[in-house]
Each structure stands twice: as structure tokens, then as C-alpha cells.
Image 1 (spheres, rainbow, N blue to C red):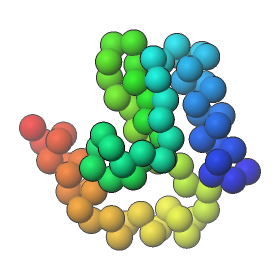
Image 2 (image 1 turned 180 degrees about the vertical axis):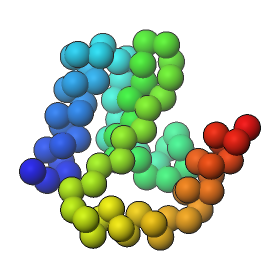
Image 3 (image 1 turned 135 degrees about the vertical axis):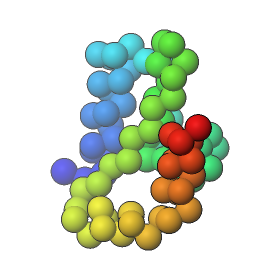
Length: 77
């Protein structure tokens, strides 16, 4: 299964099963970095999905130091 297929399945799940308001794939507009998938719930909560289809892709994510710092600051608040 490739990244596109996983994102399609996640979008269908969020929209049909969870009844989210909207899904946007491969967006840089809302979180400051490219998100594989963003989903907006009925409660107006934004969920980010980061899809990893290989170990190499997972390990490469460690290089995104700025992103991890931003996420850490958001949870520290």
C-alpha cells in the first residue's frame, strides 16, 4: 500500500465513519508544515495525520527538528 492509498482510506474513514466536516490532503496552509492529511471534526478540532509507509520515511521524520519543537511547545502551553 502506498501513501496515496493510505490517505484515501483515512479520508473516507474521517468523512464517512466519523462524520468530520472536511479533509484536506498535503496541505501547508494551516499548521506551518506539510501535513499528509488534515481533518476538521464537528467540534472544530483539527486532526493531523502523518502517513509513514516505510521505515526509512519514519526515520527521516527525526530530521524535522523545527516541527517537533513547535508541536512540543503547543503541548507545553
